[in-house]
Length: 146
Image 1: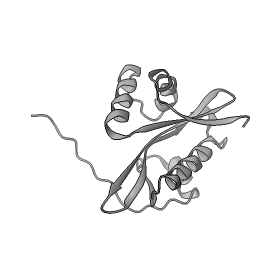
Image 2: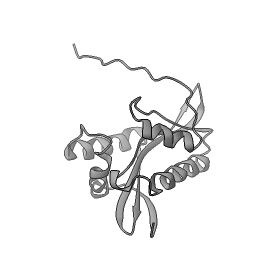
Image 3: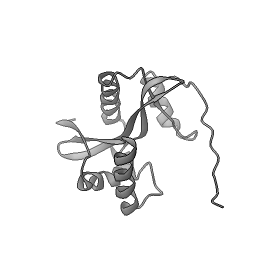
Image 4: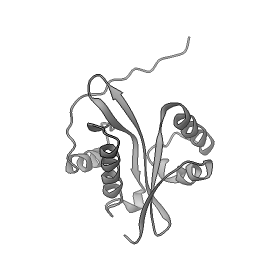
């Protein structure tokens, strides 16, 4: 790791720059859909997109938001956390995760939460190593439009 920097993507150009990294996790998205959806989530839901670069090259990204729930109080929820496949194991994900924890502390959050697909065993090992606990099951149902 050379010169790590973490910055929030606040412009369409910065969001577009992150697409190739985020697409490794969210493979169903096109560039156009991605840029539009991130912008909508930022405007409507407080979504933020943090980009970790090393030596000017984007290595990892994290989408997150602050929220308050009856169950957990004020939390930082991580929607997306991805390191480029070529850079996994180099410490970029760990550095970005630690930055998210610091951001949660600064925002007065009591906890950090995220969901992870049941098939993502490498991610689960990473989260457990970082001190996260498996505290619930996430259930979902696809709703069809009538």
